[in-house]
Image: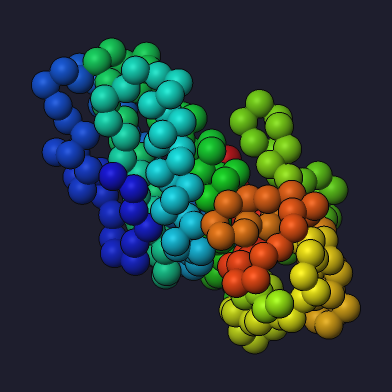
Amino acid sequence: MFRVTRDKISPADVEAWVKEPGAGAVVYFDGIVRDHSEGKKVKFLEYEAYEAMAEEKLRDIGEEIHRRWPVSKVAILHRVGHLEVGESSVIIAVSSPHRDHAFAACRFAIEQIKILVPIWKREHWEEGGRHWVNIEKTTPSASSPTAEGGNQIY
Amino acid sequence: MQVRLKLFAILREKLGEGEISMEMQPGSKVEDLLATLASRQPEIAPLLPNCLIAVNRQYVPRSQVLTAGDEIAVIPPVSGGK
């Protein structure tokens, strides 16, 4: 189950779907809007996506997980739009017969999302002002993004 | 030939629109498109070197040759976080 949505998301949305009789473990990751960022108080976040590609990339990450580990099911939900502090922005759930693979796959999923999935985040601060995270920086990054294992994406 | 260009986040805001069409010579590459875009829209030119490019929703290198009707997305660094 791979979805980019404007609706609120929670682990409960995927729990029944990932559970199955052969899976002895389910590992969840719940990414939550934090109230601070680099010394500033965050008022709310705004996420923008290239939605068609983002869903395809979430599916690609799921397929890669199935190639790497003998997991049962993978679900990834990513929310876009206006998110308040404390709300979930991303939910990942991986079920597998044994827990080691579910932990590894869940960790892999979130790290890959942060590299490959075209979704952008803008922080709005309590003090006023806003910025696109990772794009508007005081010191521009000289390095281009890299995929798992340090390979250049392009 | 005509190609469609999608721009997101800060690029969309600076341009005031998220989708534009551009006329390119047949055989043009992604790098040619970016050079044309940079000269036509200097306000976003400094951001382009850090962007990834997707053609028809797949990441491609800047040497990729474009085809008429391609949907090209200019993808600024994604949201990151630790």
